[in-house]
Length: 207
DNA sequence: CATAGGATCGCCT
DNA sequence: GGCGATCCTATGT
Image 1: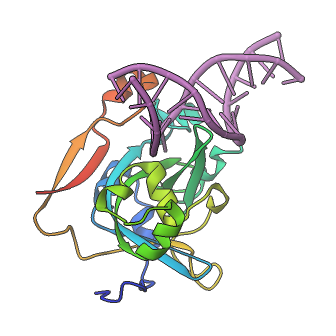
Image 2 (image 1 turned 90 degrees about the vertical axis):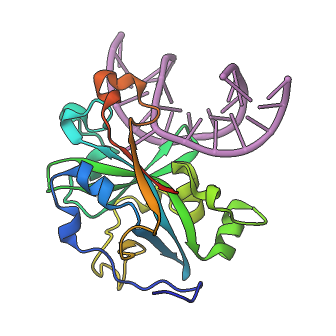
């Protein structure tokens, strides 16, 4: 599809993909898709290999649990298809995709990518000499490699809000060949009680 | 206004 | 595997 490593086609997943009400299904569907960013004409992308679903007001692990609304989480109540980026531990930007219909604050946390496009830019951003597959595993590493920051919260992932999106996801024609999905409980949410056991984490593993 | 703690990472032992 | 970094957010007084 894209043989030139310096470019990424702008063919984002449509609004209809994001406004579906089953956030767990969407988290699973995002595996194998390509997350792309274009900031200052610097294009980077990676294949999504790890996600977690956060199921809104019924999910103790969600920032919107019990219908909580704060300035930070207000974005989660928008219609699906925009970015929710927040600062974690004072250090890391974590990138989520808001899903479902307006008023239903679902989100998918992107926890891992395989670097695909713009590795030279990724080297600058991460101060690494070489970009390896493992360098994109971890939610804080995803945003660092792709240049996603808290100020990008609210950006739409499709359409042409400013001529083009700065963040979008494109279909890559299914999963990489020879890969498989591992389903497990979510990471770092022990405070969520029983909900910490939910099978809402999805990983695409190369066999 | 004060304060506790977090959807993490990387370095240290 | 343990822990410090680092700062914003949410909550309570």
